[in-house]
Structures are given as C-alpha cells and as structure tokens.
Amino acid sequence: MNSDQDWFVSVPYRPRYSAEESSDFAYEKDQSHRRCMGRKRRAATTLLVLAFLFVAGIVARVYLFFVGMRIGGRLAEGGAMSTKTNETHSLWGWRNGAKPEKKFDLAQSDSNGFFNAIPNDEWKRMKHETMMAIDLQYGVIHRTSDLLSESGANIDSKVWWADNWKINFACHDKVHVGGYWICDPMRIVSLANEYRKNSKPKRRGKKDQTACVVYVSGVNEIEFGEQFFDYLRSRSVQVDGLLACEIHIFAPNAEVRLCLTAKNLQAVHQARDGLFMHNWGFRPKNRRSTGRAFKTLENTIAELKHSGRISVLALDCEACEWDIYKDVLSLEEPIQQVLMQLHGTPYNANELFLAMQETGYVIFNREIRGDGDVWDYSWLKLAPSFFNWKY
Image 1 (cartoon, helix red, strand yellow):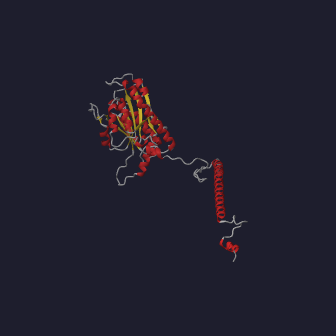
Image 2: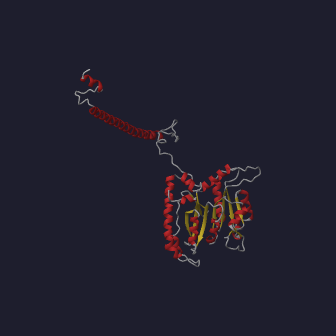
Image 3: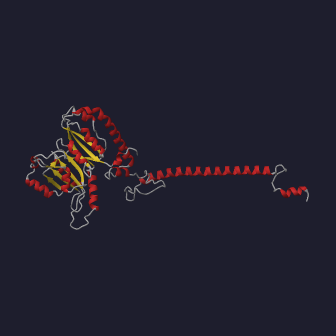
C-alpha cells in the first residue's frame, strides 16, 4: 500500500478539499463551531416558546376577565340575576370576574373572635390608625399634664378633655342604646347564640346558662337596661325559649328603684325573662361600704356566678370610676366592652386611660355630657396581638 493509501486509512474521512482543511485541528474547530451554533439555536427556540406562553397567558387572562364580566351580569333563566359566586373561571382563582376571595383571619384573631367580617387589608389600616392615635396621645400627655389637679378639683377641665384621650379605634357598627354607645351589639347576640347552640347541658336537670351577661349600674341604669333588653329581644334568635343575653340592673338608690311600683316591678319580672333587678351597687375595693347597699364588682360576679360571661359593663357611679377601674381590670376573666361615665379631671385621670390601654382596651366612642365636665366613654377589649404594630 502506497503512502497516499496509508494517509486515507489513518485519517477519518472529512469532506474537505485539501489536506490542511481535513487536519485534526480544522476538524475540532469545525465541531466547536457546530456545537456553538446548536446551543444558540436551542436558546433561541426556548426564548420563542417562553415568549409564546407569556403572550398566550396575557391573552387568556384578558379573555377570562371579559368572560367573567359577561357571566357576572348575565341574567339566569326566568329573568332573575344569577346568584352563583363560587364558580372558578381561571387558574388564578378568579370568581365571576371578581377579585380573589378576601381573608378575614387577622381581625378575628386580634379581636378574640369578636370581628369576623373585616378584610385583612382594612384591618391593617385600622391598626395603623390606632397606632398613630396612640403615639399622638403619648405626646399630648406630657404637654397637658399640668392641667390636672393634685387636689381633685378641676383646673380648666374643658382644655384637658379637648386634647386628651380621643377615639383611637373605629367601630363601624356601634349603636346608641339608652344613652350609651355599644360596639356591634348584633355580634354580641350572634356569639351568644352560637355558644348556646353548641354547649347544651350534658347532664339532665343542669341549668342552661347564657354566654352573654350585661351589667348596668348608675343613674340611668333602669332606662338603659330596659332599652337594651328590648333591643336584644327584637333582634335576638331565641334558643330553647331563652334570649341569648341576660340584663342585670343594679340600683342601690331607693328613690330610683321606687320609681317602679311593686306591681310594675313584678310585671317586669314576669314579662321579661332575662331582665333582673338587684338592690345594690358597685364600690371600689379600696373604699368601705356606705350606709346604702354596695358590693365590690368581684363579689357580685362570684355571688351571681357570672365569671367569664360578662359582655358589657355600663357604669355610672358618680366619680367612683377613678378608683373602680382597677377592679374592672383585675378580674380573672376580662369584660368585653366597658361603658363608663367620667366626671371631672382628677390628678390620676391619665392613669385610668393608660391602664385601660395597657390591658388591651381601645376607645371606640366618647361623648360629652352637660357643660363639658362629664364624658361618656366606650372601650372594647382586643387581643395582645392587635397592639403588635410590626405586621
């Protein structure tokens, strides 16, 4: 075999016109170029596919948006508007062209289950507004503390009330009943009815208890108690023949209690199962009882077996509120709403509001009475998580 034949056998066949173009170096360079071009083609193909999918996705979402609008406004058979709202029309969870379903878990956890219909975004906004109001109040305290009297007498009371302790929480469903503002009383009824339905007495003969108890004590206790009772009765669903809430009126003043004759008082008890009258009032622990009948709030709750069941406390004790608030906050089971009438501007006025706030109460209403020296306040108890501003 000659040399030309030997070269043909030892070197793989390559379609080149000369020996230099068919060398190993030229072959490797050619293969590298081919591999590079192949990678470019694959990358270009991948980009084209991704671009196609992106455009197709946008077109699909626009199409489903207009389809959802048509379905949402389409009349059902018989001329009635279709009420279906849970049909999913896309992979993104759209329902009839509307936005994805909102969540309400933040409000429910931050309010111990009291609010269950406030969307998370709105609840965050409400928390932020409360945070701003509380921060602002801290600065006002230092600027106006000299307006409080060390002796208990008033020193420019109107100026102090004008700047201090304004509403710091928005309760959108507050109702005015018998001279007091209550936050969403229908929710109180709803929670009480749910509790009654889900907690039947396990033993026969055991007395069924209501989950909602309202305490009323003060000058207008009878008026408020009766009006609130009528309000609840007209809107409450009875369970086993009983209303969801009990109203307990505490009237230590004989003149007030005798405004109802014995006949009328008996008629109240017979016609209104759930409205109770008591012939004593509340006094702070740090004060001895006067000649009239007074008991501490703690003793009253223990005697009537109402621990953990008080939803509302409406209190007007003619300036004893500056001491008795400590008894309210020291209860083992907190009261959901506290409605209290405040008189004057004693030296410890800020202490009351700060203690209420530190215990988890927010102010959802305040209202002036008379010439500006008496104010009605309404507080709502929220969970500690509400006051965590880092959300």
